[in-house]
Picture 1: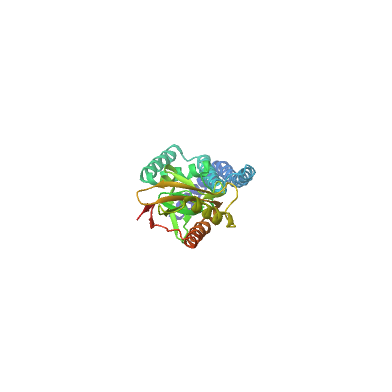
Picture 2: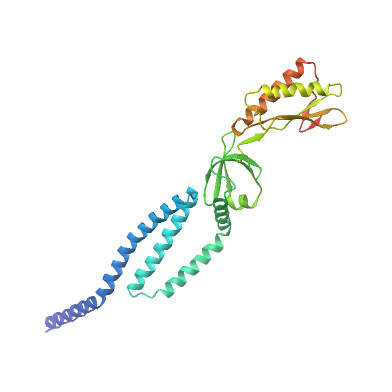
Length: 274
């Protein structure tokens, strides 16, 4: 008797399970069809978006970032659609996601500021990878523009990371945009110096240097007359990559030329004659 009751109970459960499965199978099948189609659709949309951004000549960093955001938004929408098709209530799920997003946002305010700064830099392009910039008290060549930080390589090969938040809100001097720079040098000479002769010597030095540009023309002027010395400003133009070489060569060659002509050079520390 007990065995018959057990068999009967199993039979009832089996019939009920099959009934539920048959009733639920259309939702299950349609949900998985949507999931499979959605996965392939997301891949197609992602490839299409990348092609459009390449045709529009968008910055590679911006293109990758926008593509990543797009694919994750589509994945979240697909997941919500999938569980909704299964008959699971999504309103509470969406509320939980919203609360979690708010909590994360409040805890990562600094990171969000850097994120926004990175977006501004990528969109408005005050500099590009390969440019030499001066910002936040440091000078370096831009190696990489990331979402949260910008990486610079200094002249002595140090790697400098600047948060994009403070970088985008501060003063940025792009030393590479124009393709050339002016070298600003100053010599201090005694009052016994023949200024006209000194200026001729400097002009000869600059004009004879192969890396000093002819246009704009190099310039030498009397910058200041202090109590103890004449301050002579020397201003040759050169290409960005030759800036350091020209600065050093002009200083050395002018000093040698002055000594050959018997012109005394004063001690010069940050523009002050000593």
